[in-house]
Image 1 (cartoon, rainbow, N blue to C red):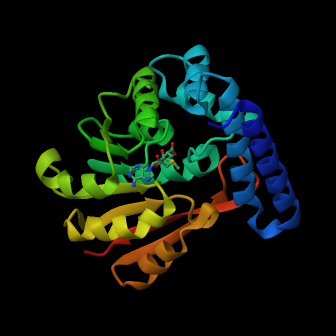
Image 2 (cartoon, helix red, strand yellow):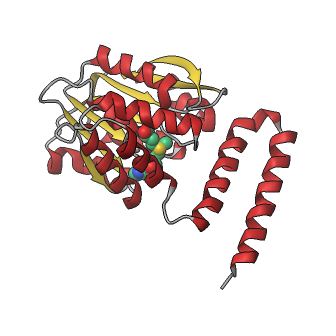
Length: 261
Ligand SMILES: C[S@@+](CC[C@H](N)C(=O)[O-])C[C@H]1O[C@@H](n2cnc3c(N)ncnc32)[C@H](O)[C@@H]1O
């Protein structure tokens, strides 16, 4: 068993190394900053009995207006700008997401990576009545936070959280969830899964001519293999939307890939 002082020493050493890394390696600054924040959060977690995600939720419960999705979104953004960074799509890229959801006007939607439910609330508030929206999350603690967030925002009748791994859930969508094809897919889970899960959507015949795939964080942390795939495989028409990494002054972008059918 590691005792508390050893753990603290270890954590302090990691922080010191990361600080040095941030100072010395400008080009990977954004990624290093995220690791730095997450290490700080992990240290904080040793002393507090709430996770960062539970603290985000608590802030919303204390400050936002129940049943008002915009107020939930605004309070998450305020918390993450002012108190602790978190990996939501965020307010700046969120505006691009809003516009693409509005122009797509989907009837069946899928999100890969729910986290605290920020983007799920953001998307759900724009959906027309009767739209089916599934969001997939494999971390049960995050899924539990998202469930409360979505309920508090008053959009729980529009969102169905599917707890599990995207690789297992995507092949179940047709039979178990009676999905024919998807109109809109927000891809925002671990970046090395973007390409295999996009290919899985194709293999499972879940895409139709005009299905929109929107991928977050294609610059930071980055999804180069996904960009290369969708831009060169001949199956998609692609558009890049430059923006900034959530709650940071670092360049990031969303990539829209429209399936040619
Ligand atoms: C960047 S966060 C999602 C942020 C969220 N879309 C938002 O903007 O509010 C990525 C999430 O994807 C989840 N995740 C990563 N890989 C996954 C997988 N293969 N299956 C299911 N969930 C996954 C992680 O646990 C994490 O909660």
